[in-house]
Image 1 (cartoon, rainbow, N blue to C red):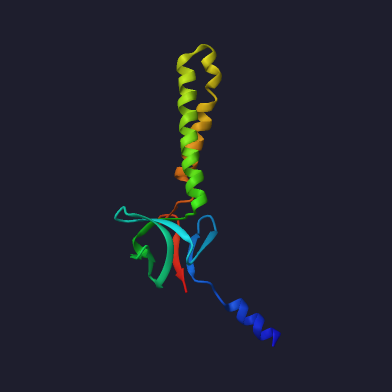
Image 2 (tube, rainbow, N blue to C red; image 1 turned 180 degrees about the vertical axis):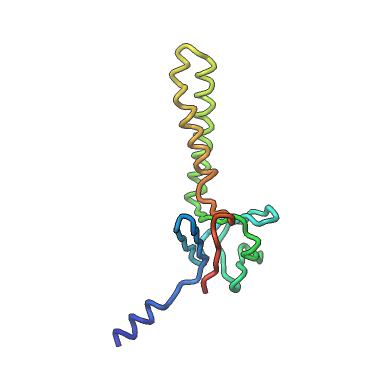
Length: 142
């Protein structure tokens, strides 16, 4: 009885989107009903909880999206949205203050280290975790 339960537990599979990067030998699983953010080939951006419709399409905010039309996909949570926005705001401020310190000269030069720190704070949230179609393969797992 225990063997039967264990084997059925191991073969049970959660529905979701499976992302695979063969060049880096890396895989990511995005379970169904989790928040994701996608960009389609038409340039439309959608974020929200998704549902699997069939093996080729998903539903986000009552919009049917073919997985073949998705060009970028990433995990999306309220926490990441808030921290990314705060990082961009603070990073922009650091960049401006650092650049102003460089331009001002004299003791303003002390603020110059803030410029590269601010630039990094802006670029990291903007560029990170976008699993683009050219590097990743998307598969729906039922």
